[in-house]
Image 1 (cartoon, rainbow, N blue to C red):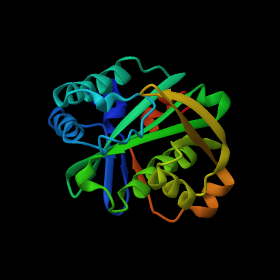
Image 2 (cartoon, helix red, strand yellow; image 1 turned 180 degrees about the vertical axis):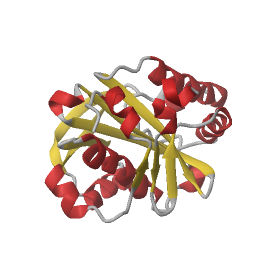
Image 3 (tube, rainbow, N blue to C red; image 1 turned 135 degrees about the vertical axis):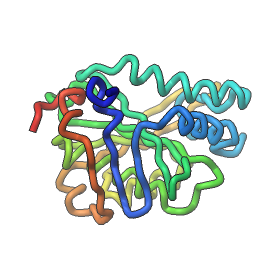
Image 4 (cartoon, rainbow, N blue to C red; image 1 turned 135 degrees about the horizontal axis):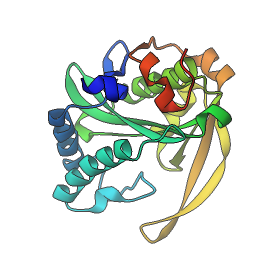
Length: 216
């Protein structure tokens, strides 16, 4: 069975409202269609790489290719887990957790996007809480980093609710102009203090070597 050779397909995170896991082929298609339908107003750009500026068909194809490429290039020392988020069985978002040399650095990074028709429902906080639980409780991380442009108040609000602290500023060239990213860092002690959303993890034990972590 596929899960025997690539146990990540059996990994599942559950919160009171959400399920996060690798998508089926049909769910990946639904995720691509969600991105093609729009994530943000055309005047805004919340991403360092403006991948949503392309025609809708290219946006959809890019979501699929990026998902496959992350899995195809996976190594225990350098990985990026793109989890599809389902709400009541409906694909609504993508939440990413990634790390390099996790066994040594004990640090992860997160990223996400949400289809515009599902925004404003508190889903962003719940799905970030899910992958933070995987990182800290499941993989032994000691810190998690994130970042958002200065005008991305929604992302910054999620980070504040979950206990992140300011971690400096970074300047980037985006769409031919200069943009400032507010870096944020969540330490284990702050995660433990602020966590309030229950999360259940299934299928992690077989996946630990793929994350560069010794079996429990």
